[in-house]
Length: 246
Image (cartoon, rainbow, N blue to C red; front, side):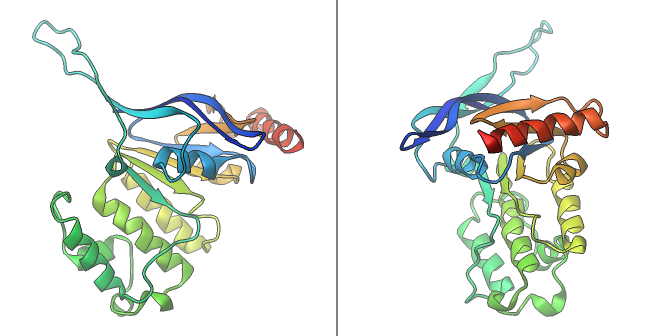
């Protein structure tokens, strides 16, 4: 499966935030979307998710064809993305704080019962994201930031969208919770496209399989052949500095 962006543009007044972006993402990878604060990462996500209208362009999912009887590859199928294809984890988690964690997951399972494949018990889901038993029946208004973030992640793990957009969800977490979340994300990438926006280079290098730089409103793949090389980091830092001073 491939996620394809074609000719995506977005302008606010005279400021061109996204400049005719075309890019192709392959499944079973975590992509680090790297850019300085204000580079347009959230705008890109909102256009993909259709929370805001792009000025031009579209997003597609393409599934490769199966091999034919004679060994040749079949034709690929391609369609425009739908809201059901995309999950979105916000940097500031938004959950219904008047519900307990258990009530929230039960409600989510109930309203999505027709689309969730191989549903698990509520406690199995809590175990998966390491929510303590003592916290499962508490109101979410009393949850920590990290716990709310886990709940936001969990509903996307349950629904299994083909594309998961992660808008800096690990930036403000403590070290332990951040490591837990990174491990969970690694288990979720098979057969899906995960795109993690961040302005923290070390986080992108640690977690992501591919690095994509948002620079001057355009996307550029960055070669990760020499992950720890000084030259590699200098190239990215230089690009981000140029963007900031533009």
